Amino acid sequence: MKRKFSYLLKQHIGSPSKPIVQKGDKVLRGQLIAEAPKDQLGANVFSSISGEVEEVTEQQIRIIADEIQSKEYVKLTSDAPLDLIRESGLVGLGGAGFPTYAKLQKPFTGEGTVIVNAAECEPILDHNMRRIDTEADKLIKGLKIVMEAVKANKGIIAIKNIHTEEIERLKTGINESNIAVATLPNMYPMGEERAIVREVLGTLLEVDQLPMAANAIVINAETVFKIREAVEDKKPLIEKDMTVAGKLQGKLLQVMLDMPLGMLIGDVFKEAGGIGLEYGEIVMGGPFTGKRVSLEDPIIKTTGGLIATEEFWKGPEKIGLLVCACGGNKERLEQIAASMGSKVVGIEYCKQAKELKNGTRKCENPGKCPGQVQKVLKLKKDGAQALLISNCTDCSNTVMSCAPQLKLPVYHCTDGPLRAVNMKLVRRIKE
Ligand code: SF4
Image 1: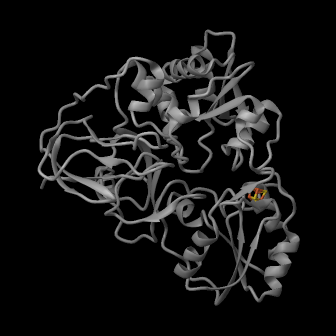
Image 2: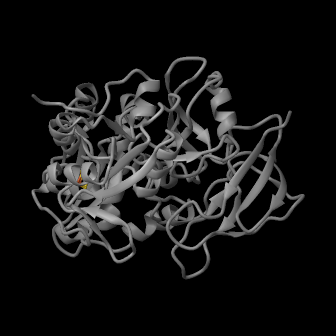
Image 3: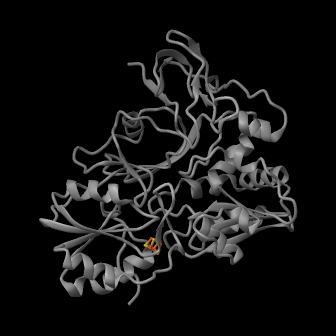
């Protein structure tokens, strides 16, 4: 049976893309099918396969793929690097989805540092490291393209200290005196943009400040790989690296490189050997920040992980939520609590999770625990018989130093994904 692909018109921060194809049109791999609206923040969308347009709606373009697919693609037509990056439809592939050309369009006027975020901070996800294993040189080339575009005098690749082989590969490939590797501690959320700036440059930004306030741009590693493809190969964004994991019929954790965007999640799992018969939910993204999706949803530009989690454990009758700004949000924890069959009797936020004007939260000092005892006591007072938390590694450690003494079992939003791949749970890490 011919496969269906679905291209959402809003896969990024900014305005939705505008379809330029109609039902019945034949399209080629790499053909532009939806444009960023003129003079608005947005991103182009390309078909990742050749086929026939089945349906165009306000939300998506559906294409039925031809049975035989070519590796050829329709090339981008721009010449200048920034124009190619804009034309390619590139957005922050680490999950942010901010259009890349907009991030790079204002060059530094004095000193400036481009930091490649190669933290791959969420547990389970491994596709950035596998790409670096074989193509470290292309990451360095991509970084040089970005540095030139924004007139940066320094480039740094930030990577967790546990990835010793990848660090060595990168160091071996760097021949420039103004490019270096910086190592990050193996804790969540060291990949958070402001955590990276703090660890690499020693500057703690305010919650509403961008890295530019520290004369820096932070850009995800996979995005940098794709920048090189756009500029040197004139290739539009049509593929995505990802980690597929959990209750699978094959290997529990599989890195799948160059998966065509728009593929339905059910088909991705089939490519991975099939999903297990029993699982809790499908999570798109990493265990901390991933969202529940269905097998009929498509993979999008920001998809980094697909995880079939362990089945939900039966929770207590009453549960309290402790919410982190860098982990699962309130709605996500409420969703998990409902799946555990528990009623939420109290909701507390980590005191560093500051609310922004748009209602989202950001951590004042990511990954450095401000103490959690008061919050835990409050939830106990609210009648909680257990806690469901989304805290960072350091704060989870603090919760575990007090909650068990109050006879409060602790569940973490990452439990389902981590149990499904037999990985260590996010719990007490130091004695
Ligand atoms: S300090 Fe609090 S808000 Fe910040 S990352 Fe840790 S749990 Fe989240």
